[in-house]
Image (cartoon, rainbow over the protein chains, first blue to last red):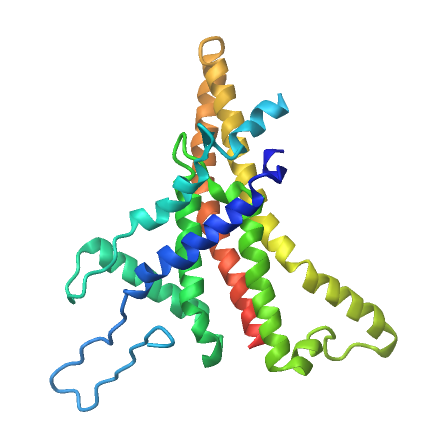
Length: 55
Length: 227
């Protein structure tokens, strides 16, 4: 089975983690989840927005 | 004959350059970053909805301390689902059929959850190795069994994804080569094979999405146990 060929294993690990850590998170991080706008008559707007943990 | 069928999983190289690098870049290139204004286009809204509902689904049973893993698991989900579904297009290479890639993701992430569990609450983490209400004579053997099941988790995680996708791609190649070779001599059999191929492709699209989801879901469950 060619998948068990150990030659590119380390390279694949390094490259996939590089892309997974460096290139993809900025794209996902720019997605924001603001809370839904409440109506004019609502006394207390239910602000249930969520941010990525450390922002 | 078997060697010929598995050749599709050979990590492709062109003039010595590994093409798996280009295949791995595909998820980054296909998703433009959202713009800072509120009204975005349909593709951005769809993406936003998908990531939001996925995060909600995965992280509602996990306590607040584990929510710092949200970015990691969301990125992993988008990455895996894109790689899996893109691999179903003809003549594309699916990096997730490589055991190396799946183990490269499974082992470090599982180990991270285990180490987190042992650092934050070691007694609680060790307590997972013995289910409540076990009869006393069974205790030693059950601890051994639970430890083995703990240690086999990353292997299962990686191999599950690899095997599901490899098997799917292999079946598609088998059935399509059968349909092609029977096309002129036994057209009815070939048309049946084409029908089977259509159903198989629909199944593989479902499997591609489900396997990515299962991978991330299991990691979130391991996180939930240890946080």
